[in-house]
Structures are given as C-alpha cells and as structure tokens.
Length: 367
Image (cartoon, rainbow, N blue to C red; front, side):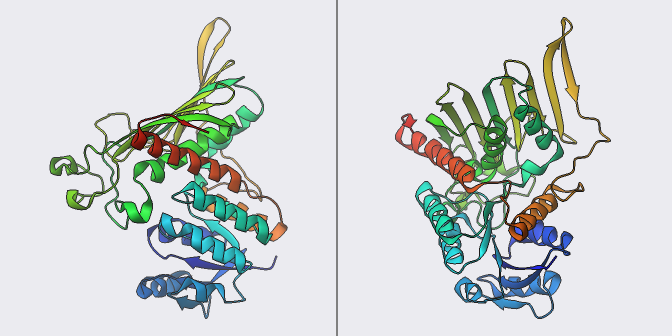
C-alpha cells in the first residue's frame, strides 16, 4: 500500500499526545511531510521527532495547504479555528481529520459539512473513545437489540478536580466553552452512537461558574493550581436532552465538582431488556463495562473478561487513538466511510450549543 502523505496543523498538546504518536504507530500506512504552528519552534520540534525526511515546516496553514504533495490534513488547533482551516483544506482537495469538537458553533460546523460534501474528500472528527474495547462491545450489543428499547441514557464527563492548566482551555474566545465542549462532547458522542438516536426534540441546560474563580478551589487539582483570574469558562454544565421518540439523555460535564464519583467518557444506558454502564475516569483504576438484567428469577450483572481484546478494521488491538488512526487511514486509502461520520459530530455540536444557549436564555431550546 502506498503511504499517505499527512500534514499536521497545530503542534501543541493534542497533536503530541494523540495524533503524532498514533500516526507513528501506523507508519506503514503514512508519512508526515508537513507541520504547521503559529509558534514555529513547536512545528520544528514536532518535525524533528515525527517527520519524514525533508519534512517541511510552516507558520501559515494556507501555505501548507498549497503543497500539492499533502494528501491528508489533521487539524489540531483551538476550537474556533477548526472551521476556517477545514473549509480551506477541502477547497485545496485534502482529506481532513479534525480534532473534536467539530466546531465551537453549529453555524460553523454546518459550513464545514457543506464544504466537505462539495469537495468529494474524506472527513472525520476525533472521537477516538468509540474505539475502546468496552465501548465497541456495548455498541455491538445495542446494534443487536440486546438492551431492547433504550429509552434513557446518561452521559458522564465529571472530574472531581482536573482542570487543564495549559494551552487555551480556559480561554472562552479560543475554545467556545469549558468542560462541556471539551470532555462532555466525548461522553455525549458515545451515548448517542450506542443509542443510534440523533433525532433531538428539545434541550434544557444549566451552566455553572462556581469554582473557577475561587482561589481555594484550586487546591488538589490534578494538573496544579489554575489562575482564577484567567478562568473564563464554566466549571460545570448539565443538560437534559429529549429525543423525538421520547427517549431522554442526561449529560453532566465538569472539570471541578465536589463529587466523589469521577466518571469521564462514560455512559449509562437503560433499555427494556437490559441496562449497561461504562465506568471510566479518575474514580476507576481500569475501564469496565457492566451489563445488568433479570435472569432466572434473579438480578444479574455481567462484565467483560479482563483477558479479552477487540479487533477493529484491519485487525489488532491497542490504544484507541492508534486504532482510530488506523481505520481513518484505511478509509482514505480504500475510499470507504470512516467510523465517525461528520453528520453525527454535527449533531453533538448542536446539542452542546443548545445547552449553553438554554442556560444563557433560561429557556428550553426546541429543535
């Protein structure tokens, strides 16, 4: 298989923690030939560590997109820039992997989808948690109808104290929001995907700015004390999502909340035949999936064997970012559909925005 020529736009935390290692782990399928960052030293460092021989460095993404050798672009920049970069990339006939969320606003996300459809290129969003073994298992069970009619779900994205103190996470102008748009997006994506229900009727939300500006609240933060003076985003957000078929989803998202049970990128599903819970986050030493149902006159709980693994697409198990990257590269190479579809990511963005809007306007948002 011919190696795809990949470019990275944005060489900060998410690029170095997820995208670049995942691409390196799939080096038989790609080579990274271009790096772009507004801070040139970051692009140079990434190119030296992960780049192919002769990899080019840019500070202007438009110049990178003009490089005819680049086939695939990974967008790893702050949320507010996703749309303009993706639209330009599609115009330049590049395949696009955009980091989550699709955008900070539904209007910009819709522009991205429109540009993608006109381009004929491939497009996906970085919801790598779908590739975790327990999420794959739960999704397969839902597809087979093993839970029956799933009428209630809960999307969990709660940290007791784990406010990210680097980058632009607390900058509302750059990110568009805080924990809701950052980690709530993963929990909601998992929940909607497993329920296979994107038909929203209404959304109500509450958004709290309670702990971010309290100096004493920084004590015990996993990533060190944050600066209360520069904390611009919410510290917690709650959403109540009603689907058109009557199903209901509760979404909870927080970087800092006085709650013992810290669950992140997790979901609870309740169906007519069975229920299921994914436990993941600070309160759990390992990720686990628990099914619950009645059987033989008793209540039962079932879990995955710790020796199990799951293969996906081209085969093999491993860290979810690596598996996500592999299936994405295979989709581009083979002209097949990636697992995370743009329309699904757009639905997530619309719901998150509605929660913010509902809280601000103190009303239910009808879809």
